[in-house]
Image (tube, rainbow, N blue to C red; front, side):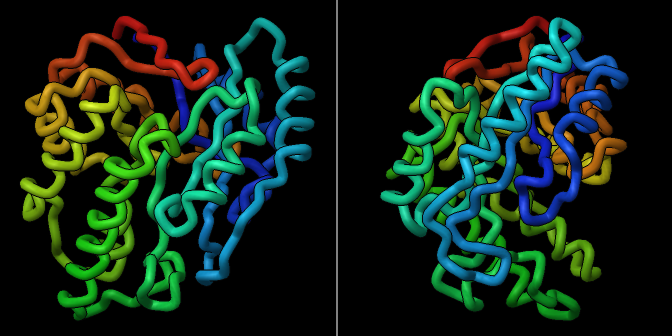
Length: 271
């Protein structure tokens, strides 16, 4: 299998303290052939504050230094996890333009409530014994994911962790499955496929494995071809955790290839 991890964070992200050099060394030690750093750029901050810029000089400086350090031991890519693009598409497009030709890959994420709950990250809501709020979190995320894939397809390459709100809903003990939203997810997938975009299988450091066989079956059934995989590591020891299992799920779902990106163009690798 082509071992690759296209979702990771360094100290450029607000929720990581990791040195990118340590992340890359971990990628090499894990046997990865390809690794992409995708630091957070959320147009709504953790507590809902508007964000209209990204520190590209710092991100590019550390990327080039580490790329030189790893040399031929690893294919090393520069990516971005762009969150909440529908909240400010002009800012999203301006930030992506500043990435220039060095930018290889863009994950399209929805981490925040948009227009609700103060715009804060979904992680900060309390879903305990609150099925109504839980449903609202999933539905709001799907609403804005629909906006992303239909109105702003230039703002992402791979649709990131479509099950994101369920991480925190399950954390708080509420039983809910993406299976209850099949029609809405399939409609989103048809738009993703129509515009030649990818779906990300995000295993959240090996802790979020359960939903992906079903989600992948829907994507495949809708005609999907491009799938990326990511561990969503925020620490060196989390790099590549769950990636072999993710690739096995992709293969079991009937996909022959895993996808990586170079200069925002898909590259297919035989599984």
